[in-house]
Length: 283
Image (tube, rainbow, N blue to C red):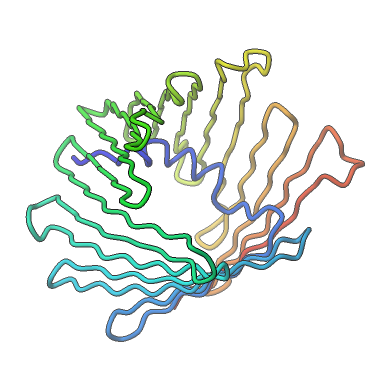
């Protein structure tokens, strides 16, 4: 069995705490697919407090015969990006990716190459930034549910290692537990996720910053309850008293609405709370 890539080792618990919580914003996503397989996605979000609007148009085409995928996007910051992927063309489990971006109103440029390689019990990635010379690499290995992962970044200009992270974990049939040591073992995170029943999910995570021991341990609990096949609710709370609530409803096939709120229970009388909504159309 192929393990998750390093970024997804904590995905179940991260999704539980982050997805379906559009705090402080109104979001809209429209996704359509043409008869020849071209996918168009339009994303837009308005910050409720400032009124600022950001949006993006993305097109994607997959040539399954040749294992090629083309992706282009253009956002309101006038940033144009392009990406080409080649998967399983030269070897099974090998994916090559070339991506670049250019800002139309500034000199901001980026050019990156990425190599992914996955086999049973192994997932490795290497990412090279050509214009800001640096290399980022990570690897995950697994054995009978046990997971071990490591990530590092190296800046070629300074000749210094800029990031070192590591993760130990175990993935069972209905639960996942991980321990991470980030920022050269200065930031530690313990995370746990479990699908308790078919309709209930629960998770918890705790973070300790070794460089800031006075801050103590920050902890968070979260859950998801599936009401029926078209609706579910989520809730989370942290040790600072911030309570997050969300409700997601499938209005009709391809149309989903999420409503969310973040409430500071320690300052209920103050204007510190955040509301938000997200509407998604997919055809």
